[in-house]
Length: 597
Image 1: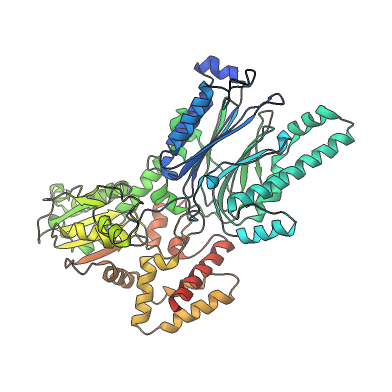
Image 2 (image 1 turned 180 degrees about the vertical axis):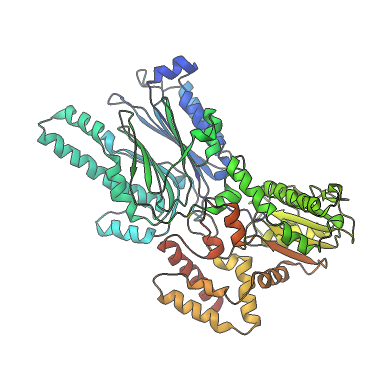
């Protein structure tokens, strides 16, 4: 993806189902679970490079000794920092506590990788989040892959009850609400224990062994609108992960007689535990996987499933391509563009060079090439006519300390480089595929200009995804509609054709309506081809005279290639929850009002 998007996080969890001595005897180390957690986090580093954290719970610990541990770090090397610190503490326990347990060696682990989609940075926003209490059962540690769309309403609900959340963010507010519900669950058990005639430590043991985390989830999660996988550990030994009722965010689990493990992606579990894809299960929407203090595994439907809307962007871009199904789907996305590409080059395969934008478009590129070769077979032309080259190279990383606009733009033109001599100047078409086009910034400031240095007859830029027209509010950092090149093209066409009243009407509808998505009206007057042509006008630098054409995947083609992940709101404007619709109306309203000022 030329315009790099950040994704809201990856999760990794492990619950050991046997005593620690079992793993030390069988695997020769008491760090078995910790090492597995490290693998799971490293295999998901693509999901978060702004921060990382882990938590560990050690069961059956004596009073006076720590039993919940947490470590967090910021930066792209955060995973390394976290585990270096943890391993140092394991190797160098506190000298003033000779009887204390070895830190970070326990039965339950949670790992998290963070990308911010809210602009909020700093160590305090890095997961996991921890709520402390002297009652073990009231200690709660949370992390997740989520973005909540109704956080203001939940905040008002909490404050109306007299609570004072310290930080206004969905993570902290969720922690406070769930922590409050956990407190109520513990108090329920306390009263029950007293009615049974229990006293002292017997009450504590009764509470620790009878917490019903499903009660906590049922009284917490229905308050939230959004896409999420919510994960948690308690001090008394409860382990859980829950997926949103529309299945927007992904979650997979693996269970055997030794471990229960949860991750954001299936191949992570396959690789870490050396098992087949058939051994990995997907967590159903609205459902929770739970392990209690005794190690008993349970699944419960916390919220009734909504219409299934699993994120298609996960399949196009975010998830690692080594998942068998994702690999097949991405190839099919490229293959399905064959006819549109052939039309754009007038069927002149002999004088065309095919390539891709590294690195996430590579699988779609192979599918595209399969399609071009199949066409040659169909029409009886030799496959030797098909020419493919790695034309574009990802050369440097633009450093964030360079903040001045002009300097950044000048450097952005050199983020990519090209392979000279791969195109016959003035003779060959140059076809390059990317997985998606969002804002078009990198196209305009870099890609088009460097491709033009090869002096092709025509540049065809292909997107394996449809036109991105609407913001996302479930965990991808594209919430400002005015930044999208497709939206800019639609507005430009509206103005050219004297349809200014449409912008005003949509604004008024966004202000008045309490449901639905009137922003979809912005695109209704135009065909996809009309928008493509206008996008080319907006993206083509004045210095580039080579003809340029854009080719996008169709919405129908998307669903044909990825039938089991129908969530397409970024392309269709059909949001899976009321909160998404509301935030889309707000995004348009903010764009409209800023434009008028």
